[in-house]
Amino acid sequence: MPPEIRAIGIEGLPEVRAGDDLATQIMDACAAQGTPIEDGDVLVVTQKIVSKAEGRVMTIDDVEASPLAVAITEGHRRDPRHTEMILRESRRIVRMDRGVIISETYHGYICANAGIDASNIPGANAICLLPVDPDASARQIRDAIRVRLGVDVAVLVSDTFGRPWRNGAVNVSIGVAGFNPVVSYVGEFDPHGNELHTTTIAVADELAATAELVTGKLLGVPVAIIKGYPIERMDDADSRAIVRDSDKDLFR
Image 1 (cartoon, rainbow, N blue to C red):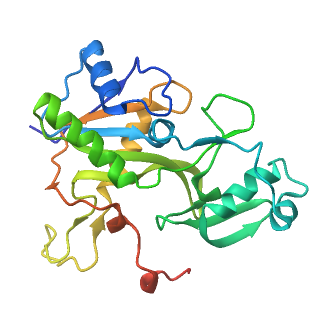
Image 2 (spheres, rainbow, N blue to C red):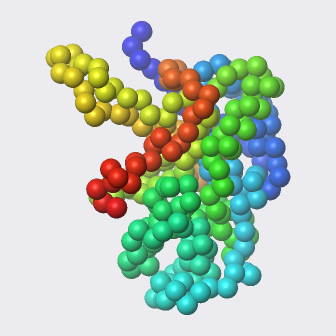
């Protein structure tokens, strides 16, 4: 059989709130939809519902904007208090221009606005921060599925990042559990006998992007299951494998 994978959006999850048992909500929604979670599946969970369940949604009403935040925001539509939280959630600022902030988060990710946004969350002046430890979030969901259903799955937490030099954002992985997020072909040979010296594929990002095709941004579908992809199982998976070391970053 030729290679084939399926991506299935999971509907019917309630509005997630702080303290919710997200793994149980996901399993219940899959059961209600008639989409079984099976051994070897890849479960893609969007960052927003993970952050909601972990209490990472906040209002900026009580945030005091620093003079720097006010100066950065002047002339642009973002609230200076929102900008202040971007600065607080950033390890370093990579670039600022025309109100846009590209920063390095404390997780090591380079992205716009430290991953903070205000979409798909209820309430005035509310913003959503990234999970503190997305890998731990993914592991918790994976462990809960294994306990309740007796199956071993891969779990990744996805978020939407822009890309340098290309228009349009894509979903990438910011947290992983149960599988190798980067597959290396170094030392292998192509069909013409050429040895591969540098080729590594960020399969976690590819799976996250695949899932976005069925979750979308406005569909209210925050979880997807990908079936048929041959994951390389790994109990000690770490999303830092996706982040390029600083000594190899030519644009740092």
